[in-house]
Length: 430
Image 1 (spheres, rainbow, N blue to C red):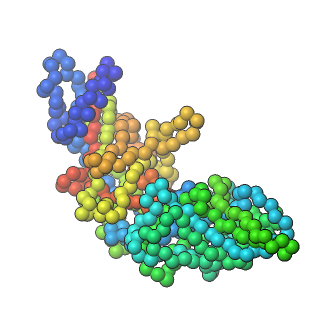
Image 2 (image 1 turned 30 degrees about the vertical axis):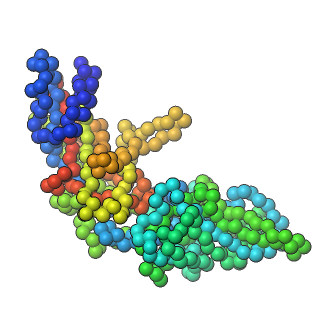
């Protein structure tokens, strides 16, 4: 019987997606009298949704590294900086006495996707600073709001100004000869890892840059090359220093929403704001599912609960200029602030590694669709026992630690095309 219910449910919900109604018995009039199961659908769940700022998240060990600043007409001011350890990953050995001729540093851009966000025609400047202490995420977790001001030299050792649209695959800097000489000396004495801590990249405060770039740590162009020679040999050689998977790297973000229309924790707001770079997340309140308690003492089975999050019109969100988030995730947050992944959203691959289920933007209908079946069912069971859930439901940008996209979403209070939760359920006698 349950298998029949589930098979029928899938077919019924597919038909329902074409037209939404508040009639809990919709469609049953076309079924033969003897075949009508007790399957009901409602889209009248009163959900509440809030825009909530992210306090901080773990941004260490990311594949993509962000740098720049921008003023989004909707999301306000944002800035991104990062630091990274560069190592002698080719394990090239040299002897003492090497003399540095020059040092060229490059950052490889993420050319697999759009690598810049903001105004690509305005000049941008990036400064490079020398780290003054070791940052090791084997011993410490680093977050997006990490204060690095006391861990870098006060003045930059290099900078570059460029127009983002004119970039091809990389950004080049010239580092001081003294920096290269120090690296050579420590390689020769096998003391490099303990004494050369890495570099910090930040947008310059002296220009009107309005762009954030996404670089890749494992790009073949992300490295610095030290060119050198020996007195006894005039031939020039070189040694590369790159960022390996085990090298510490941290993305750091900052946002200022003070001059925007983003109203934090306002459930009556008709628009919701979801932003990567540890910007904002969405908090959901689905406590209205308590209405299912009206069937007590009957037993309610949640066959499917689907949350639809439609994007706001382009004229409002400016999505044609500022790319919306490609995929989102649904996580829980306990009352003590601990964030965790719901078990049904964990996918284990054949190799044994685990990933989190992501929900892609449906570009045809301009909306996200999130499966909340397990969440609604679990919460309803708690309500039946007179208990309250120990967690809240949150929607995040999947790339919130390494990407710069953002989305403006219609809230449940929007009069046209609002966020909605559609629940398909079956009522049984106990």
